[in-house]
Amino acid sequence: MKVFSDSPQKTIEIGRKLGKYLEPGDVIYLSGSLGAGKTHFAKGVALGLGVEDHVTSPTFTLINEYEGRMPFYHVDVYRLEEEEEAHELGLEEYLYGSGVTLIEWPERIKTVLPEDYLAVELRFTGTGSEARELEISARGERYEKLVEQLKQKFAGDVWALL
Image (tube, rainbow, N blue to C red; front, top):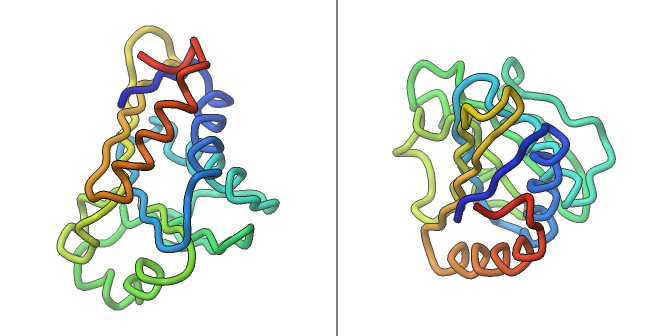
């Protein structure tokens, strides 16, 4: 499924809509180049989960934890040099816990991550400095159902679906 955003506010809104459908144990892989809007998307997911705290990028802390209707773990592994460091962080406790885990730069720790997940890739479209295409894909039955729910949710948003 591809979704279009022409502003940071719309990227946040797309994340918020997704966040409303997430359940304990859900894992989101978030990819995109630097400046693509990953943190804006994460802010939206947090809003959808009822997080009231200000959401920031965990680039230097690696993991930010927030409380909403369930825990939200925002993980950024860009600075990890080896996959073993993800084990040292105790990442498995987050991935298989009672909250939602969103991981930026998941390709850096592939062997540590679960096989089932929701993937969101943000890309610059070249149609404007704020324009982004978000490709949302699923691996596993739970996430395939989630993508179908999202398609129905976004169907009424003329600005969103490509």
